Amino acid sequence: PSWGYHLIIKKIESISDTAGSAYVYSLIDYMTQPQKTEIHEKVLYIACRGCTFNDIGAARIELAALADGAKRGRNPTMHLVISWQEGEFPTQEEVDEAVRILLEELNLTGHSVVYALHLDTDNLHVHVAVSRVHPDTEKLITPANGLDIEAIHKATARIEHAQGWGSERNSRYTVRPNGQLIRNGLEVWKADGLPMKRRDMEHRTGVKSAQRVGGEKIKDVLAKV
Image (tube, rainbow, N blue to C red):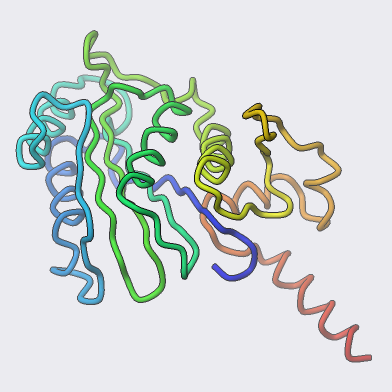
């Protein structure tokens, strides 16, 4: 979006909480062949990591098997999207790094993951499908101990810092030149008058809240008086 974000990471909730292999097959099929449903969307790069074989077809089967093997808990396959602002073009190496950083913050390093870089009419974005099943214990892992949205904010700041992308003025986290990740003070988050909950929703969805839209309209009107 052109209203402030340079990098957005979104968690995409599945329709079914108990989806197994059918969900994995459907998701990865879309990731690898988006043009079947979105004619303007193209795949530029596909990769996997944490899988037994470095092959997308084999990784697809592996993630599906892990999903079916999970007996309890919510959907064992997590779907995330990393989006760059229009006009920003990450390299394949930067895509790999962005996925690595995201998995680190979610405490899912080493888990089986498939990701694909897509180009649509507006921007480049990466779909990430990662199994929450631990590769050794085969138990379901709760990403970032339940603080996955907070972890996504941290990952956003770290990726922007590592790759030189611009960051939003009121971002929740900042990375200092020495690499230290710090949480910005509440005064930064309250600078635009939005409640924390509304800003969380904006970061999660990439969509302006009704309160922000209303405030901007009021400012426009006042500016013309």
